[in-house]
Picture 1 (tube, rainbow, N blue to C red):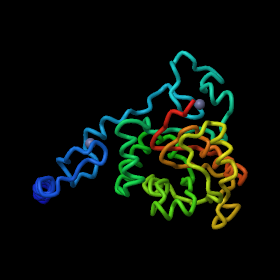
Picture 2: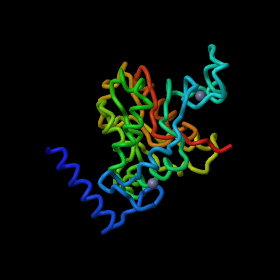
Picture 3: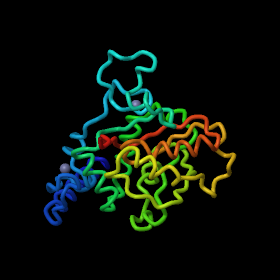
Length: 250
Ligand SMILES: [Zn+2]
Ligand SMILES: [Zn+2]
C-alpha cells in the first residue's frame, strides 16, 4: 500500500516537474520524463558503449581478438612496449557519446548526484578488482583545481565503491591539462606531480592491495605516476579503475 502510494506520488511529482520546470537531460538535453529519477534520461544511460572482452590483462583495453591469448600476448602492444606501473586496470565504458556528456555534467556542471550511478557502473565492470582490495585511493586534484571545481570527482566516485577510502596521494605541482598532449609529453607532465600524502602514516600502506580511482583514463600516464608512488611506499598490488577510457591521441 505504502509502496503504491509512494509510486503514485513520484509519478505525480515527475509529471509536475517535467511540465513546470521542464528540466533537460544532462547528456542529450531532451526534457526529462522522470526528473525524480536523476539528471540523465534512461535512453542516455543505456546507450553507453561498454568495454567488452577480450581485454589486455594489464591496461584493460580491448584486444583485437580472442585468438592471441597466450603469455605476453595477452597484453596489448602498448603494455608490451612500456609496461605500466599498475598491475591491472578496468574501465566501465568508452569515453564517447553519452558517457562523455554525463562525465562532463558530473565534473564541470556540478551534477554531483551522478557519482552514485557512475560508481555503480565501475562496480559492475571492476568487481573483480574491488572484491579483495584493502582500500581505494582517489587520484587527487591539484588543490587550486579542486578549489575551483568545488570537489574532486575521483573522491566522489570512490565514496560509493563500498571499500574503505584512503586519500593517500597528494598532487604537489600544478601540471598542464593532459588533454591535447602527446603520450610522451603526458608522462613527463605528471611524473613528478604526485607524492604520498603527508596525512598518511608512511607504513599504513605496506603490503596492501590498492585500487586507484579516477573518472577517465587516456594514456594511463596519471595512473602510472600514482602507481609508482604507491609501489615506492610498499604497496603490494596497484589496480586502476575508471568510469571511462578514452582513445589516446596518436
Ligand atoms: Zn538523455
Ligand atoms: Zn594494455
